[in-house]
Amino acid sequence: MKLSCLPVSLYDDVFSGKSTVTDWIDLAAELGLDGVDFSIKFFPDRREKTINKIRTTLERRKIDACMVACYSDFTHPDKTVRSQEWDNIKLDIRLAKELGAKFVRVTAGQNHPGIKREDGIRWVTEGFRFALDESEKHGVTLAYENHTKGAPWDYWDFSQPSEIFLEILDDLSSTPLGVCFDTANPLVLNEDVLDLFERVLDRIVVLHIFDMKEAGSFEPVCVGTGVSPIPQILSRLRQESYDGWLSIEEASRQGRKGFEASVAFVRNTW
Image 1: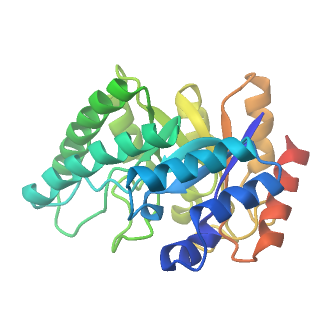
Image 2: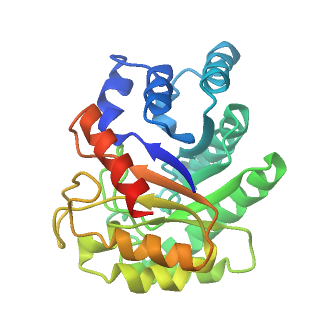
């Protein structure tokens, strides 16, 4: 089992400059993680000097760069903005390669007011096909998440409800697009997490282990203390001899103890 973490609880500190990406890598090493996930928003500075410093820290700490979480917004009604999103994902994939990351988390985009379902699905599949061409050039795997709302977004994800997520996946069934399956996001709409999990099981390349206080709302809690069916999902993955990455989405805002508790819960449950 390879364990990574997306440090949502640290977002504000990293975005503001109060802490750094290397601080996060140091913490991950202290937690005994095998890898780290990054938000693309961690990298306003993409100079070679900056990237080399991060790679040196990863090597020194013997930590892998697992995934870069991007916020692709391929559903914007303005064609010019969508074109810019294509340019952005191209640069983001290149950055992931420079960091040594194995995966890029992609999202469909926001549910912008007024967009028609058929238009949104077409725009997303077009954007993903472009991104897949780029990712294959750089040896990076795209992982499409059953997402809710990105940190920099105004609206919820277009992929909700899950039938839209599944339709987009089906349209791209002949491509190497993988799935970053989130263990809690379907709960926001009171959807059946385990049913969706079974329907995409064979395409999962990264499992986002996330927990919610209760169904029908978006209130993250420390992993293992909410209503997400994490033990059932991990048990099912063991049955399938899953050897991909598990990535904790730590968003409890409890500081270091939240990370420690989440890591311990996942290791013990696995």
